[in-house]
Amino acid sequence: MKKLIFSIALMLSVVAGRAQSIVVYIYDNDGDFTNIRNAPKGKIVFKLPSRDGVMIGVDKMVNGWWRLVGNTAQAGDFEYTITGSTTGYWIHSSVIAVGTRNYGGQKITLYKEPSEKSSAVFSFTDERQLRVLDMKGDEWVKVRTIDGKYTGWVDSNWLCGNSLTNCC
Image (spheres, rainbow, N blue to C red):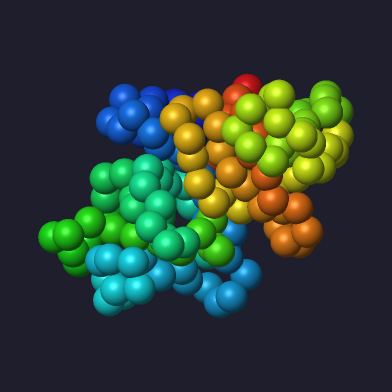
């Protein structure tokens, strides 16, 4: 229960703190830790565990790098306080992901542009993990399938930034 309450609080703080932000989780298969930097391609200032379902909020993308919202990350009941920078914290898009919320087998479509009137790039009914590439407002998120085969825009309501629960 405590984990659920914190997850909800993290998601609400991200939404309230920035106009365009999203909760994501670490999805990094390259080692035990994921680097947090003080700028895009900057100095490593902190390392988060790669395999604990660590959630963070991100809000701005610059050349493949996402800026963290605040300086905290959550893994289950444990909260990490990220330190080491006075200029903010950044993480590369290749090590974060979101899951889809189509738990009942609903069809999710990735679109060429951020509009349901745009042409479909790919549709699926199975739950998937997706890399987060961009955002347009709070409604649309540009994603890439983990295998790298498909890239497109999806309605943010279909996404979940918690690898340990289903966000319902």
